[in-house]
Amino acid sequence: MLKKLQDFVQGIGKPEWCSMLTYVARLHEKSIHQAEFPFTYPWEEIGPGYCYGPAFGHWDIVHAVLDVMQAEPEHAYQQLVNNFTVQQEDGLLPGSIWFGEGKPQWNQVAGHPPVWPYAVEKLFKLHPHYDTVAFRERSFLVLVRQIEWFEKNRSADHQGFYYTDILNHTWESGVDDGVRFLNTQSGPYACVDATSHLFALYEMVTIWGKCLKNDVSDYIKKSQQLREFIQDKLYSHQTRFFHDIWNVDVPDSRVMTIEGTWPMIVGAATESQANGVIENLMDPQLFLSDHPLTTVSMDDPRFELRMWRGPAWNSMTYWVALGCLRYQRSDAAETLLEKALDQSAKQFEQTGTIWEFYHPFGGDPRKVARKPGTKQNCPCPDYLGHNPLIAMTSLWKNTKELNAETRHINK
Image (cartoon, rainbow, N blue to C red; front, top):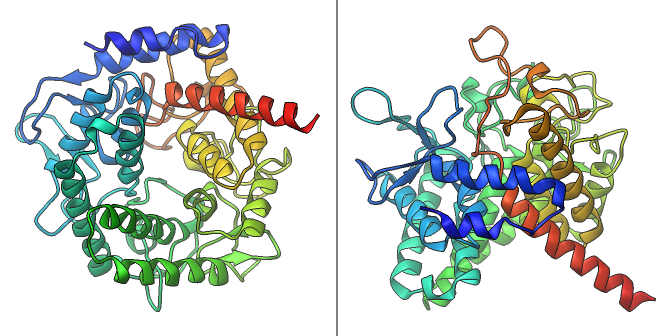
């Protein structure tokens, strides 16, 4: 079904990555189900090894779409449409949709990080024939409704946006059991990731609106206000990193976590702030582990080999690499991608699968905790939702060529 993807992965990276990438291509095909309610097209699950599957994930499907897009644009397009199809009347895009016995089920009051517009925009750029007025208008309307939902339901006190993690630890941010919310007073306080994600939505709706000749002046104003808020209120000059509003100026509770990279990823940081973040990420005493990146700074006492409290997630390494490229740090992007792909391939050779997340020091992923006290206390195998390994390889290839060209020019 995805024959072009199988052909595409041959020879795009290092020879030692080939077996892993071929496996990933086959896993994409294995994860496709026939069209059924509520979807218009055949749908791709998070991965056959997902412990709560089969499921269609809003956050996870974006990584799957990015992975297949270059070779299989029609499949990528269909998954984006499937995602649009489940948008509720109130504008919420569900986080994960579970297909068990009976009707599909999903949380109707909370979602996942809204990064899907990046996939739509990449589809437009890689395959311009999908950039029709009809599809751009549909994408624009879905985005407007989602923004309205966030503004109504996730506006923080004073300014910014929050995820429900700060209220009830339901992990709407996707960062289950994140250390940012340990011993923290509950309240609708600005989260660095949610606020950055809304900045990105304002930026994208402005771009699409201009293409459609719509009045986007209100979104431009909101984008600028949020940019200033992120730069002025969520950045610590002491740590050279971004933090949540409640601990950015409180050293005793402040923690450097991977979520603090989102302002750099979405372009809300100043150049100086972005370089501060990147320098922290490239520090082997902080985030640059054997398998980058750690999800909590290694010098923090809250660091542990447990899910989002230390282990490496390839999806986040991919987003961070994109952010590095946004700020002309292709050197950092190449290093991060190559190290992550090297270690993923090493673990594939040893275990025969790809994992939900990885041991940051190159150890066996099965030795890393997921959720203590549950049946699944190690990373899920055959997990596509956080492993855009084909997209990472393509980005590594392009970045490596860019760096080689730059070095040649500077000679």
